Image 1 (cartoon, one colour):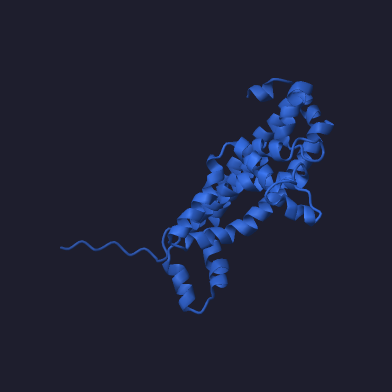
Image 2 (image 1 turned 60 degrees about the vertical axis):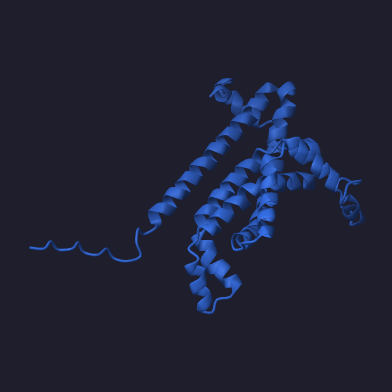
Amino acid sequence: MAIFLQIPPGDLVSALGSDAATDALRVTAETTAIAMAAILLVGTPAAYWLATRRSRLRDVLVTLVELPLVLPPAVAGIGLLAAFARLGLLGGTFDALGLEIAFTKIAVVFAVVFVASPFYVRTAIAAFEGLDPALPGAARTLGAGPAKVFLRVALPLAAGGLGAGSALAFARAVGEFGATIMFAGSLQGVTQTLSTAIYEQFDADLDVALAIGALLVASSAVTLVSFKLLVRWRSDSRSPTLFAPSPPPSSSR
């Protein structure tokens, strides 16, 4: 409330029309859309594969997936630099392909995927693990291959959990700051996202910083409300039982 009440609503809307705010909104929309597409396309089958395995290797892989959740943002940023900068571990490979990763828009996407994907993948693993194993098994006995079982059985049944994971990953992606500013920098119109724009505008124009903060608060609230409505709609649309209720037993005389 302090953010919204700090300046008049008219000035708040006007500040959102500044070049810094519009550029940051465009960069955030572009990079978040690409990152979320990559997270969903790669993370969904990966989560299903991990959920259907029971081995020590699986436990190690899940731990690696969860690691970015507890890493300090500075460690994530310096790790991405060590991996993808020109003199980094994989930088020479990308340089040979004519691609420069660090301090470009690609770096923003990499940072967002790194920090946001665990929120989706871990939730998706739990959603797939919660499925009744008899249902995919029945589909297999009826002749469905692994891909068809995944697409026609597992995905629809786990849709609620996947939606929750998507909402969490999206909220984390939009608010990403630490790894992005270290790995991609904060160049207006190129790598400056909404979160890094707040940091830059804090000294330059506080009204713009407050306006961007208000926008992020509003988007976060919309994400949470949308998630709650989705969960409620999913729960209301499900039938409480697959069979008609049995009539109550007659009392003996």
